[in-house]
Length: 306
Image 1 (cartoon, rainbow, N blue to C red):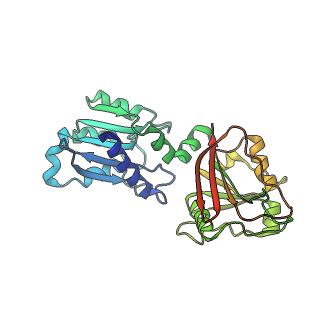
Image 2 (cartoon, rainbow, N blue to C red; image 1 turned 180 degrees about the vertical axis):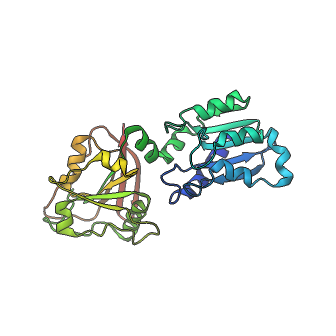
Image 3 (cartoon, rainbow, N blue to C red; image 1 turned 90 degrees about the vertical axis):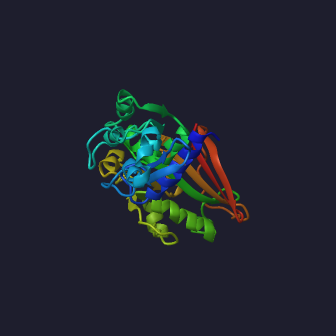
């Protein structure tokens, strides 16, 4: 790992602190490093409408370290903004502070930015490096990017199944998750803007779809059927950047058939089998495994598109 990657990893660590409150803005972390390799300032985007990561990083620099800025490098996980929104452009502050170099994790796909911040820094004579840990920086804000690029939420299809591939026990609800994986499901819900089930699941299982075993906000609850189909444009208009679809099988398959998914999370209880019931959906051919974890006999596999 080189120094640029080391300090960018710190940016990513900081950025994740804004997971709950930065929305609908992206999570961003920033680190200021002096010419001798010492971190003299760092910050992250704490809350939407408040100061951005770069502003907080410069504000954290001690008075006696201010003279070091002219030879310092600013690391930031996402391209600095160049437009006026709820806060002034960060690039103007960066130029004013006079840092020698800026290292950017990834370009901001938001229409008001898209390379303009990088260009403005370069025109001011600042040395700019782009694309350090780019894939990880993009993944951190995948919901934000999908929302602006595809004009729809980032969609996660999620289900739990028995070892022999059923999501219930002869069409009756069955507890497949263990205590720990249930907690992970609630953590995932706390990070999502909305959660969706079909009418049959709603009427048969009466799922709470809340955050109970984790700290955070409950996602917006959505129920669909043939009379009330999903309107992706409506979700976009209501600023829903991330959507979890928790089933049942018919609802999940409808998303798979339409290609409306970005991520699939399947939990398999490797010790449980049932005599019959509702078959779990098939994983599509264009899905690749990106993560696999075993939690006391329950395996969670995460797929994404090729």
